[in-house]
Amino acid sequence: MLCDRIWRNARLATLCGPGLGEIQDGLVACADGRIVYAGAAGEAPDHDAPEIVDCQGRWITPGLIDPHTHLVYAGDRAGEFEQRLAGASYEEIARAGGGIVSTMRATRTADEKALVAAALPRLDALLAEGVTTVEIKSGYGLSLEHELKQLQAARALERLRSVRIVTTLLAAHAVPPEHRGAPDVYVDEICERIIPQAAAEGLADQVDAFCETIGYTPAQVRRVFEAARNHGLPIKLHAEQLSNSHGAALAAEFGALSADHLEHLDEDGVAAMARAGTTAVLLPGAYYFTRERQPPPIDELRRRGVPMALATDCNPGTSPLTSLLLVLNMAATLFRLTVPECLAGVTREAARALGRLSEVGTLEPGKSCDLAIWDIEQPAELVYRIGFNPLHARVWRGECTW
Image (cartoon, rainbow, N blue to C red; front, side, top):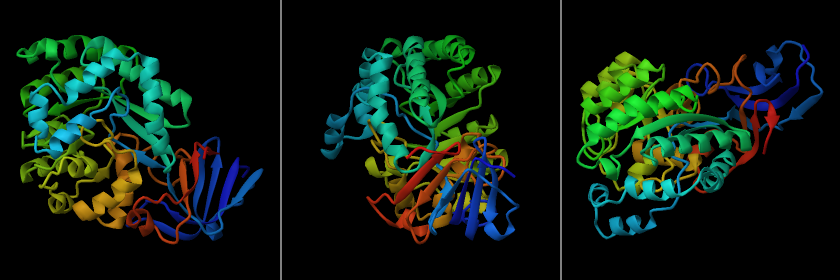
C-alpha cells in the first residue's frame, strides 16, 4: 500500500485499550492525512512511502488535546492576582466589578484583529508542547456583537496555524453590567438572539454556561441548554467549581459532553454523569491558582467509571496557564491521578469531552494523523518533569509542523 509518510523504529502509546496501549517496536503509516496503520512493525502489512522517518526509538503519542480554554481575550488581571494574595476571594473580586466583567471591558474594546494577535502567543505555547486540538470559548463579550467577535477570532486562529479549533459559545459566563439586577433579560438575549445567530453563522460548535452562585442558576442554565438543543448544538457546563449548585446533574440530564471543574461535585452528581456518559474535565491549574482546598471527588469518579479529561483552563483571571505538560504534573500531584489517567486525560478523554473521539485522541486507523513525538525513555517522564519540554516533533494531519 502506498502511503504519504511512515514513522518507524518508534515506541507507541496508542491510548487504545487498557493502560497506555504501549507498543515497543512500533510503526505509524499515514495517507491523505489519516492513519492507515498504527501498531507493531512486525505485524504491519506492506507499506511504501516517499518519506520514511526513523524515530530512533522515540515515543509517539496522539497529538495532545486541550479541551477547555478561554484563549481569546484582551487585557490581563494581574492586579486581581495581587488582591487575592492580600486575602480577597475570587467571589469578592467578582462582586466588586472585577473578574469576568473586567476582562469583558477590555475584550469589548479590542477588535477581532487585536484579539487574534493577543491569542496567538498563547496558542503557540500550547502547540510547542505537542497540542494539535484546542477548544476555545467565548464568554468575555457578553453581547451578541462581542460574543460573535470572539468566536470569529477563534476561527481565524485555525486559519493561521496548523491546529484543530473547537469553538464554544459561553455567552452565559457572567451577567453583563447593562443587565445587572435583571439577568433573565440577558438570558432571553442568549436564547433568542446569540445562540441562533452563532448557530446560523456556523461559529459555535457547542454551548457552555457557568452554573454558580456568581454565574447563572440551574433554572437559567436549563433555558440556555434548551435553546442550544433546539439549534442542534452539543452542550458543556462549568459546574461545581465554587459550590455545589447541582449543575453536573443538570448537564447530565441534557446528555452533556462534559461537566468541568467539579471540586464540589457530590455523589449524586457523579452518578448522574456516569449514567449519561458525561466526561469530567478537571482543571488543576485553576485549583492551584485560586488556592482551592477541596479537590474533585477523584475516587468516586473512578469508581463510577466517569472518564476524566484534563485541560489548562487558560484564562486571565483564574488560570493564566499555557502548558498542558504542567497540567499533567499538577493532576498527578494535586489530584493523585496515575500516569495512564493523566496521559489519557489530554488525549483520548479530552477528545471524548469535545465529542471528537471518532476523529482524534488515539493512534488507530481512520483517525487524523495527529502525533506528538517525544525525546523520552518512558511515558511517565511527561508527567514527572516540571518546566521541561521533551517534544521532538509535532505532526498535524500527517504533516510535521514543528
